[in-house]
Amino acid sequence: MWTCPKCGSHVDSTFEICWSCGTTPEGVEDPDFVTADEAEPIYDAPLDLKSQLGSALEQELPEPPKEVVEFYQARNSAEAKFLVDQLAERGILAVANETHTANMEYISNRFLPRLSVRAEDYARARSFVEDYEERKKSRRDEVEAS
Image (cartoon, rainbow, N blue to C red):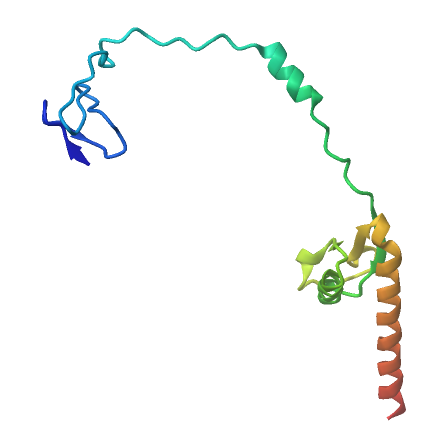
């Protein structure tokens, strides 16, 4: 902030001349300075909508959304969340429906959480859950054997 040597106005330091009288901090007056109140209105050039729309239309459209396919039905919301997190660690984006019902008892298989992935990740996701199911079965067999 500086004070104009001519009119005493306080001027922000980002300005090179006083907004009120057009004087520099060194006291040099700008002979062409006109206050905003005295200046003629400045009119914006009319919009050329055709050229603006034309350039917007020439831009490439975004890629359509990826196809999402269901690949697994979890036994509960906790398992669904676990699998979604495990797949994310492996770079596979997965989503589960019905995860907001974590405290709900599932009455029928129709309401169990279903997991979905992008179509191109289906094989990797299925491979992971098949290994997961096999590990679960092995642990269950070990428990029953002991």
